Image (tube, rainbow, N blue to C red; front, side):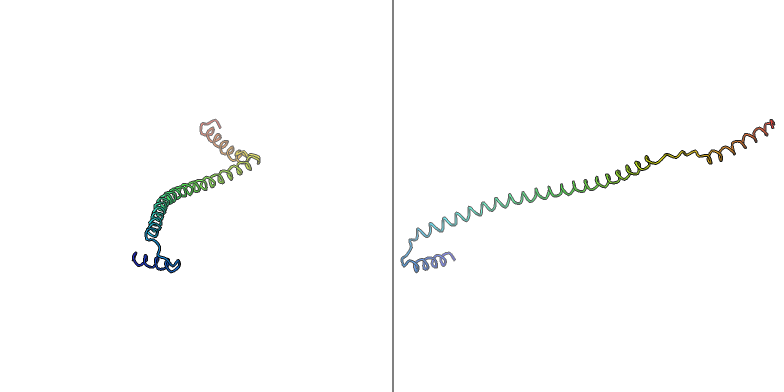
Length: 127
């Protein structure tokens, strides 16, 4: 394959210039091109390793950001719930506080108590 390529390159160069190029010049150019190609391959290999490392780091960062977003969403939900409870308490505080002891409750508890005292006095024989 290389010899066919070399022949084609020599023929095309000869046809263009009309003279036979020196073989050392051609070999030198090809060698320098191959060295440049290998150098670029090594650089691309190193770059590939760096890109893979950055991709892995980005994946870790993305996972952490996602975890933090979930925590913030949960915290926001809890804050909304607490805010609603505070607003309810503020509304309650603004309304007058009703005593659990109303006149009706007092009378309903007083009559059985009076009746109980009368029954006890009757049982003892005072009445």
